[in-house]
Image 1: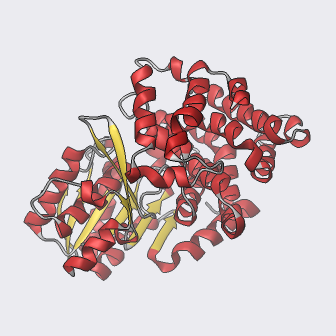
Image 2: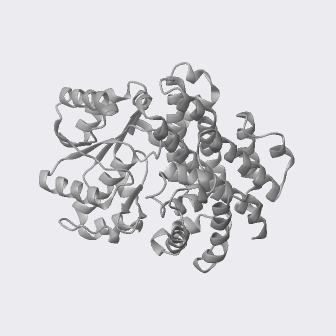
Image 3: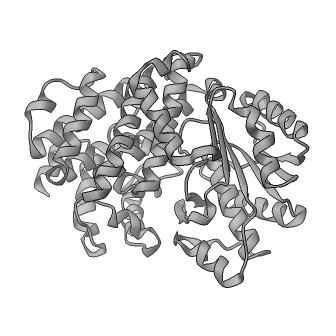
Length: 430
């Protein structure tokens, strides 16, 4: 980390994160030592949730030692969540919270475990005994229910283990109904973790595929929020998004090629954390919305990486400033040529989209939907239905090109058709 901090970009990232979270967030290296003091500040009886993945064992043991030293009584660890936070895991965690009545929750894991625990905490506090998250999907509905019931959620210490979703920093909980294959969102300040830790050394043990998927998730947070921002919001998010995007584009290939490259891992952690900061300032849009409908086919990071180039072309007339800055990042990283400096409008969108796809191909990612085994017309229909669901309306509202529900079949349908064929030029006819 010390060597990385000689770079102005990394120092900027650290300053931005400190401005964002202040003393409630411990990050960098040796951050796990803060687990005990952070937990003790919230409560002494802790429900300790973390998966039994072999690569996490050293971190779990280190956290447990820190808790005991601080006088915190850990109940567990109990199993966290499987990928995409399926309902069954959320309901199981809700029951554990109700049965054990902890003063503090400690979640150790990637986005799936932390998202499931956020949702479970809301259910336990606001609808105990009920396995129904529907009332809480959308924006602000947990806070509204808590006010009506004069209730409070058990505070959460979120300990991140993967450079990915930044679930340890945000107001989002993405959980999935396996029966329908559809992911939905709780968006609420009430579920923001009270304290957070990310020791970037832990991510050294991440498998290569998880590294790639997680890195692209964080990259997409920066891209989508930056593309969708306007006016004062654009001025606020621009330094956050651009620093995060550049850290990831520059260092993700290194982290994937050499899992033990601690400098690259720290840079990737900073970049994906800034992605989390970005989605607290703005919101994601098309790529994230579509990815929620394909959870049984594609890891989330892979889905958004596939869709971002197509939306970059679709949005191009409205985001030339953003595309110019992003194109410069991809050029500095060697994925684009001077065309990103010369082109304008839609042609600039195409140039940046092709740079994104070069990076994806180099990492073994698909660049068209028909390359995905099992993908078919039903997945297109499912994505279009989801885009019209009022519970996911925030994604349409955050599009830089306005799209009302009645426009979805025509406009988004054309983007998905282009992505299915792998033909960026088809978007020219929109």
